[in-house]
Length: 256
Image (tube, rainbow, N blue to C red; front, side):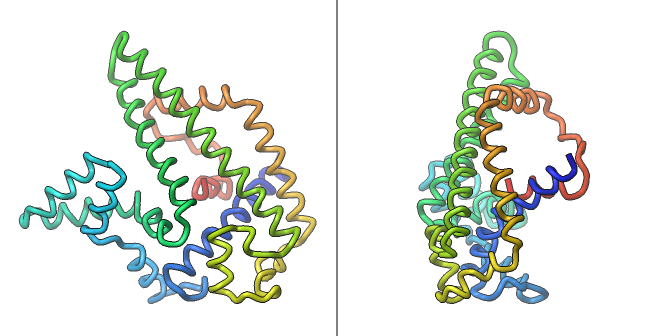
């Protein structure tokens, strides 16, 4: 069990690392060794101005959030509230707004997932507070949206797996699509530069990680109904998840 957990964690970190490195390179345009002032520069690069954020919210039809932000922007006495709300919006949407600049296709997938998660939060609140027929309807909608989110997440996992398999097979960073092209520009275009990430990892370990990921995906597909129902029940409880697992396994959630 411990070996399986370790391999699964390594696989998640491995599959997520390419995206993380690419994000840092495009925003900061420096190496991935960010300390001190470089980290400040990274954070500044992620900040979205109120005007840009408002344009994004309106364009994506996040109507309530757009109206709230616009109201705060028009009221000089609400400066502190404006900064707090803008900080929250940056945490939710900042990454995808930057992603739209270099990976529009990937950004659309991210946006679709954000919208699903927003709908899930709404229906979960309704299902927890409503009664009778309204509660039954809200629970059905909640289960439907969770099912859609399951499909979206699974498709993303399958795509990442295919990209990593292609990268390991060819050593070509373009296997990662728009992110791969960007990584090539930031880190060099030669095969040596492209293989730098994989070259630091044991090939056998990489194969084991990918095999485990394939098995995970197959198990998720087989047990979709159970997984969706479990998550719906968790959402209806409205309590923070209990930390059954320790240390490293908790890190998996960062990359989900």
